[in-house]
Amino acid sequence: MKLKEKLEQWNVKSSNEIGFHEVISPNKKECKVSYIYRLNLNEGDEYTLESKELEMNLVLIQGQALIKINNENKDMTRYDSLYIPGKSKLIIKAIKPAIFYIGAAICEGIGKVFFRKFDKTLPLGEIHQIHGNGSGEREVFFTLNPEVPASRLICGLTWGGDGTWTSWPPHQHEKDLEEVYCYFDMDFPRIGFHLSYIKEGEIEAGVLHPVTSGSMIMAPSGYHPTVATPGTRNSYFWVLVAFTPETRSYDRAILDKNYVGGAK
Image (cartoon, rainbow, N blue to C red; front, top):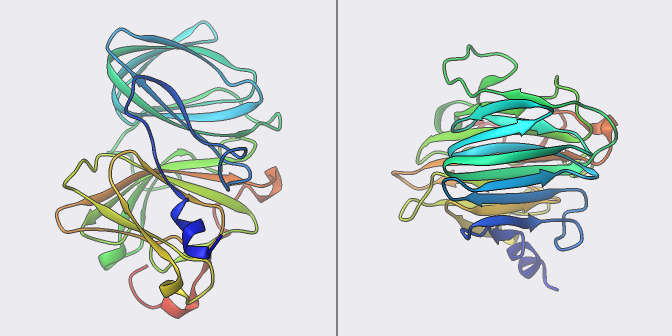
């Protein structure tokens, strides 16, 4: 298979149909350790989720839901998140039509149930951060930051500015972690572009993926900068999956030095 044909397959469109959908898994896609699921529920629907051998980070992208786990009820509104380790079971009831994005990885016995309420007024710190500057500035809200015990996952939400880059200079972390970008709040005609390329400096050998709500782009290797068109803010749930618990770290990115010095 030619390189560009391979890179084109890294773009997967998740389903809008009601139900639980496996979008990316090691036995079906090139990612070796990353699992991505999407759960769509109508108002009043209930779904029982069992994590089995996986740890999971669930984010409510749209709607309102009630979670029942370990004899506790958790009300979830937009962008709230929940981490569950392996061998967990929960019941999800949609109070309003709901969409969940779910990142997952093999659980190594680290971590416990952890709920995070989204709070856009949270001061900047471990959870709420601003990355980059100028045309590369973006807002980041960790749904599962490195300081929270987990086996392999680090996850969060990113919002860019109108027509700006949400990852520049290009970076890669292929020796230590895979990543998947799961786009939302970008219904047509709003659109962004996600660039995938393998070798430092060789952008022309890459593939430019158009992305809208529901697009999910794998980064099993190589560089993966993203940009929005005018009138669009790139918005995505990103899922970093470490190859081992020891490489579960947020500071392993290697920049493409050909582009260092622009927006970061």
